[in-house]
Image (cartoon, rainbow, N blue to C red; front, top):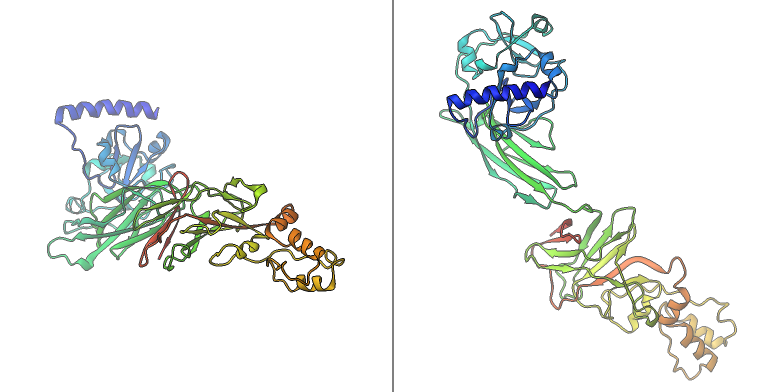
Length: 465
């Protein structure tokens, strides 16, 4: 029924417009008016917003008149933010102009009350529209309590809003910054100005401010938004058509799941320059194929696969870099001293004796138990006990016997450590060392933003310094 009524009205008004001339592309839609565009949705204009009347029962419940619906361009409708839908007729919307059927008094609904507009001069000075007056049943009028009568002796003035600063059409962050001002008009001080902002898709109503800026922290998701801003005088006169800016927030579905915890952008060499990534979730996260980017230079560096067990002839295969919950990855700009990116394990400390890592790899290698070496000579046992963790022994000591040398060569080195411990649950650590392989530093010495992007090029995190 609702659709049929709207279709009928569309034809009627189309005929009127065909006779009277072309509808302007955009026009000011006054509070209290009923409007629709090309589609079937009918909106009530309230306080510079449009509110969708969701079904014909609500429309009829208010006692609104179908012939009062004004057909306007979709551009005009889109110039106003979408407020909360009108889903029931329990309370008349603000700004409704109502008159009892066959009556003479015109009321303006304000704060839930009906306020009589005393005379035609007041009506005109307030900038109200005669075409928006709804003749409603007497029982509806009686349900609304009486407010203070309205008298307006001067014409309401309207400032002109200017949006000075706005984000781009597509942004890759959750913080947006707007700056605005207004032209108040002749002999009207700027101190009389207020501003109201509305971020469609985020706010439910106008947000009032006396400042000329607003910084908004958005949800961590990709989404379209439209920001509206209108200047307003303290006496109530507002810009009739808000300024607006539409933009897309484009973020990775993994936004802030992996975080840039720290960075050392001012290191003396690329070998010391690093970025620390940390998994902030409770599930494993694969970062192979992701990239780090300098916002200053727009240079991008891919995070490639790595060796889960490096520098071991039996495990010469690469795997994805997967960060377990609370897992970390140190991403170094330079080349790997051992030639590989790798996952840390309990035995990698042995590699410090062969390669110069900065900082050195952790030395947490398992030590021989007293039971393992109880059959060796006391001198051999003493030499082994004096070794630091992950230290390669000196087998050239002439005081060592052949059994001692054999034990040392077969058990106290990286390869043997891996072979003997790789199947234990705590062998692998939740830390990776990844090397990008550059010869020079990546990050600027002064100021830059390090950006982490997923495999689709979407922003996961930012680190500004």
